[in-house]
Length: 339
Image (cartoon, rainbow, N blue to C red; front, side, top):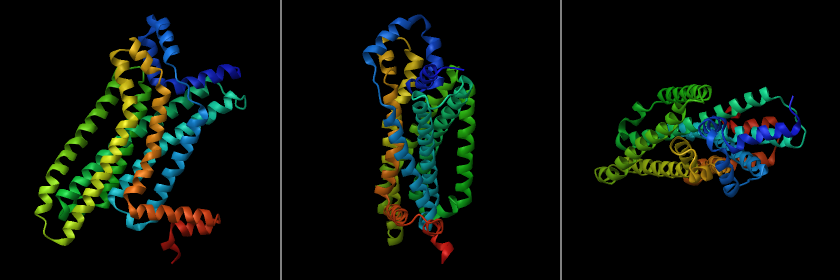
């Protein structure tokens, strides 16, 4: 059994490096320990654990509200919003992992929790799987939403026959199954360089795929819209382009928030011992904050870009402020059940 100080140091290490990256980094920098320590001292950045906890809780509440709003409003029961709902769940995984980890760290730091190294290793693996599942599923659902918008724009008349609810549910199930399976494999084989290569490759492939769809959508959408004479179809075109613009914003925020993390992975492979890279590694806590901020910003984008979702979120907040009775809350979430 470790004493409280040892436990705290063991847990604190996770916010400095993800376990997968730490083990790989330690193996590749054994002969350069003194130089790395000197760089870490000059480039170190300390972020209070309370900030992690606060951002994680806010992000968790926001994404729960988005999921509840989509469930509540039957006007939002469409494939695109199903995918957005799954994207919110992906963000929730990061929030839950961060909140649980930070609470354990704070409790251990203040001597309120005594855990064994074995328990900490299991907790670390679960948190890593949740984080890895989040990034893989987020990228997958961003690609799925891009494909959905593409079909909406260029195959408007056939959209409902192509993207049926059954197909959307099948896609969602496949994405989650693949994401969880891949994450478990990544953690099991964390010591292999191939794990980092696969993550970086997947990140690049999804960005290229989405960029190609965007280029086709935005370059040809203007030409395509001129050929549309029917009023209904013109309105549908405008709505579809609005959805594509929303996705562009989501993808841009994702790249800004997750980009430093993936650059971190690339540098681990290319220059694990150079002064610049070791200094860059020491800012890993900041990269974690950016990842949490992505989960926090996404719901704001959904609400800003969708009037229907924004209205439903206001109704949810209004209901929660007025009453805490169980039957009233259920009536607020599922009004059609009480009519």
